[in-house]
Image 1 (cartoon, rainbow, N blue to C red):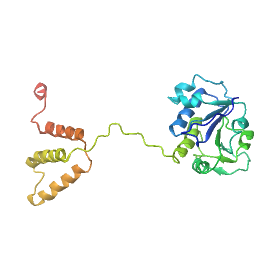
Image 2 (cartoon, rainbow, N blue to C red; image 1 turned 90 degrees about the vertical axis):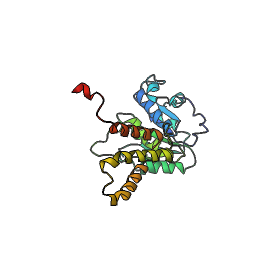
Image 3 (cartoon, one colour; image 1 turned 60 degrees about the horizontal axis):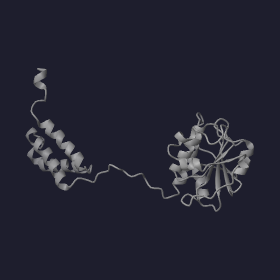
Image 4 (cartoon, one colour; image 1 turned 120 degrees about the horizontal axis):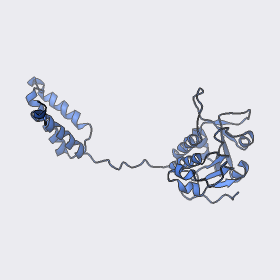
Length: 254
């Protein structure tokens, strides 16, 4: 066992995630990935079945190496949460234990408003937390789930709580790298004019009494999508192709 370390200054208020007797290194890695995605970084392991470090955890973490590198190992759940004032146990089975039962959303809301360290316990993949582990907690976290199919794996359980935590913090949406600005008005007018030029000889704007309204409606439809310049160029290329006589290669097929 190693003593609890100081928390990262950027993630210092996030609850500690405690995996009790986890079986697969892959699941530890996936849990670490879920944690870091949503603003959690402190992982504690209680008697991991295959020991620690586990070579299978790294690839599954997909870059969440900081979580794995700082993960601490304990010989019991009690030792893992010894410095925590608020302990929550995730389980789908109440087992006769009389404790408050909360959804992940309600539990995280409570954690966000509490002073002192908080920890969330997750049990082994096959059996979940045992009675002694649950007894450490002041409340139980249970996910509303389909009663006919209650198969939720370890990383999924972690991500449900981690996501609720992220909603209490100012995490930003990933940037849209290829999001181009709307095209200038002149390019949009050119597109509309291109449509009108091709539609006019086809009788689209007839009868004449309706032509003005039809043109206005066409402009409204083409203005709504906020085309960027590449999209407008593509549409005009389509129109140019449609306006050509015949088809390239048609003579070869006759």
